Length: 395
Image (tube, rainbow, N blue to C red; front, side):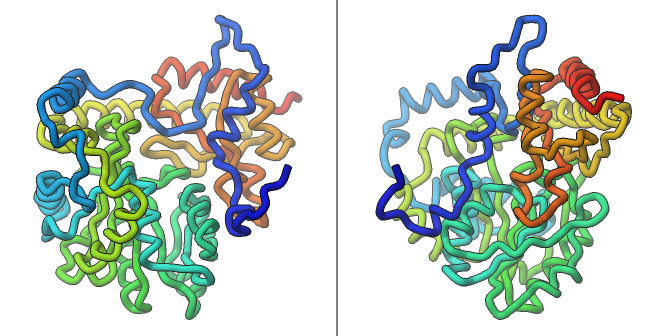
């Protein structure tokens, strides 16, 4: 029965893709000899390391403030620690008042975007895009302007410049990329900053997966620019590095004046971030550097296994691979949504079709798939390749 009344912007927004894909599992049995291989979602499935869990438990028992409202923009200690560590990591200057803590990185994006764009405005998103970014823009009545990417799924600043109109408010980049896995070269990110600055736009860089970047050192030099706050907005998530997905802790680094506007949004939506989650994030950034390095090494090993496995699959083409994701073209004659649903039954594999990351009018999505491999070890990746090969077109 249709809802009446219903905000037309919500009516025009697609359903959450991961939830839709999970419904494909209904009524399908997976025998013990062929259990489901779930490569549909990038969230860690293991709990945080025991030392961090103990820190959370101790805070819950011994810190009364952990159960109360806190500052809207986050714990001062966490903001200061992030400013200190990010300044060192990026070779720039970030102050604590330029850091805000949010209920996850998705909320960070929504909060920032709410201060930048309203109904009728435009925001440039490279494709394939992160679907939650597109969903928020749709719900807010903001037009997402697709920027097609080229080789290696890298966006072109000149192509972006051609899309800018008087309604454009921001350009959004994700690096390492979700869904494509691409790591954007530092000079490319710098070129987008210069474009955004020249045109009076904001550049939003979502670095949720920065802890799993294959490169050493800072992935870009934007914070080394003394004028970075006039244009640049950085987003981050503690969920992946410290396995804090259920605690919902993210961060924004932006001009202090921008965060004063963000505070209005956060106070209205959540009042404050989770206190226990913030305590956990602070403990993690202070104590788990070596542990995170080990997690990064494991993810890079799985990335190498994905690249090697995909190279052996006849007819498959790897478009991008990095962080938690491989983004591929498939050889099956069926469109990606149909093929992805069939893989559940035919191969015991759950993954997402490219149509969930592309405009409906872009035919490339029908040939593409996203494989989120972070929760699958090397043996699991080998098994995945065997199943994909068996499920492909038959001679």
